[in-house]
Image (tube, rainbow over the protein chains, first blue to last red):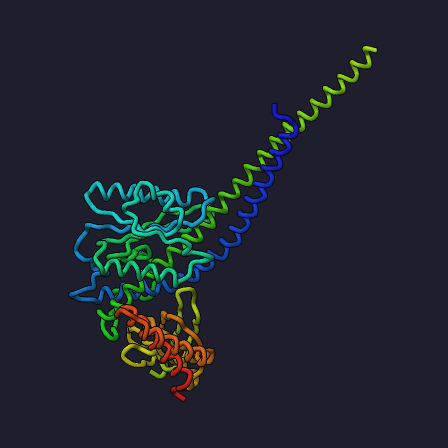
Amino acid sequence: MASLKELRSRIDSVKSTQRITSAMKMVAGAKLAKAQERAEAGRPYADSMERMLRAVAAGASGSAPALLAGNGADETHLLVLITSDRGLCGGFNGAIARWARQRINTLTQSGKQVKLLIVGRKGLGLLGRDYRSMIVDTLEDISKPVPTFDAAASIGTRIAEMFAAGEFDVCALVYNKFQSALTQVVTPAQLVPFAAVDEDKDAPDDESNGADVSYDFEPDEAEILDQLLPRNLSVQMYRALLESFASEQGARMTAMDSATRNAGDMIDRLSLIYNRSRQAEITKELIEIISGAEAL
Amino acid sequence: MANEMDNKVEFELVAPEKILLAEPVEMVVVPGEDGDFGVLAGHSHLISNIRPGVIHIFADAEVQTRIFVAGGFAEVTPERCVVLAEDAIAVEDIDVSAVESEIGDLNDDLQDATDDDARIVVEAKLKIAHAKVQASELQLYQ
């Protein structure tokens, strides 16, 4: 059995770990509230843009730009993976990596080429060894201290440039969508060619059902699309970064909460052992004294 | 028709980060790419690009608010006018001296620009900066 001194130092070390995890939990909780606010504040822009894009796309006739219609090929797939820069957030990054592995397997098995653009240091750590040759680039510290639209726009522009240079045919974005502090959902979204998200199709209260009314366009569809489509990449990117950032804080908060609880359990257990051994020691000493006295 | 004139159009100015302004207005003039257009209630459906310029919000037939936008898109329906804006700033908040020194810097950049891509980026920024100065100096619709 460990000596009393050993036990004491173990209890102390678990206690200081617990202090760290509980501080991290509280920091993540505070950040989560703000991140959620930002994610919600960013929604109107993304929603309006999507509505406009759908309306213009429906009106666009004939030669639609490649960002909208695709370039006809389906050979090279670019996967944009959004992970975090820092760890200690439970299964947050693992979930993205798992999805990516599956997707890469399916794509390579059907003879497609895969390229990876990784946002966040942790994604590189998880996938770097197995898929080194597929990784185009890793972007770090994008969401530091918080995701900004400018940062998202730089990624969006980059994707548009890569597409223009013919470096890929299809582009999908994968991120952790924020559902609650406890749950994050790995969500893939196709960026190129543009695919309208149909999730609110059955919302009848949407006053302007996009494609139903015919819009006038100024200057014309093609020119609006030329500006709208690259912009949309940035907006999608920004939305994903915000969602992912909120998810990360939620995941970290949950992970740190259970770590704090585990540390508490461990301290209780160690304290019990410590107290018992101390008592045993005292009893032993008493017996020695008493038997010594009796022997006289 | 008279009834429609009394109506207001729901104006929304939205930045990627948040909604900057959402209020019913009498009339708003938006700097479209092919020229300014005014929006009253009952305007036909329209989607337009926006050039760097000033959004004028009218109340009682007078300009009430001037907001500079560097670009973006506008969606107009009979009830609403949604402007997705980049870099929106109230005209009275424009710091002309700061923008002018920015123009100086940009001109230097333009000289230093080696390839066409860089030049296009700087020229776009210059255009925005010039529009900003013009916006604060030239008060339209007085």
